[in-house]
Length: 93
Image 1 (cartoon, rainbow, N blue to C red):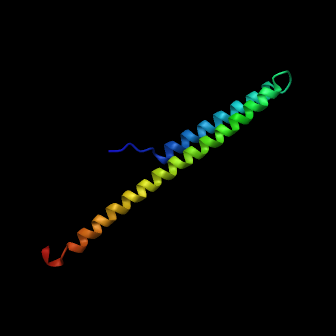
Image 2: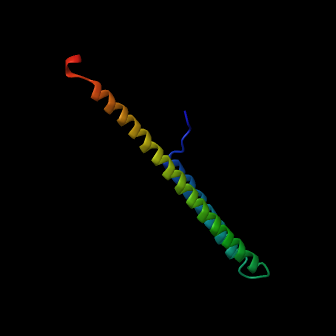
Image 3: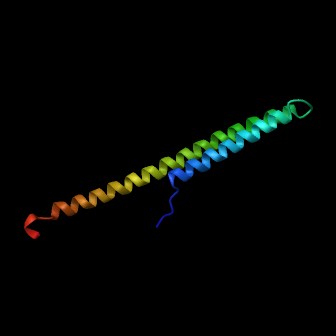
């Protein structure tokens, strides 16, 4: 049996990771506003923003994949049940 990522868990992990990255970016931005590290902090905040965006895309892809897989499995079950009911006759009972 395949292990699946729950959409709720993926959403919680993704949102927590995004909040963490944005808080880190804000701390870097505030910490390096004045002084020689401003240019480095600007690049670090930009890199963290890009990382947060990519993490969001990855989490959305995982959620979509998990939902599509569940829908595909449900479709297979309904097809199997349809075949069973097509072969079932009322006189068999």
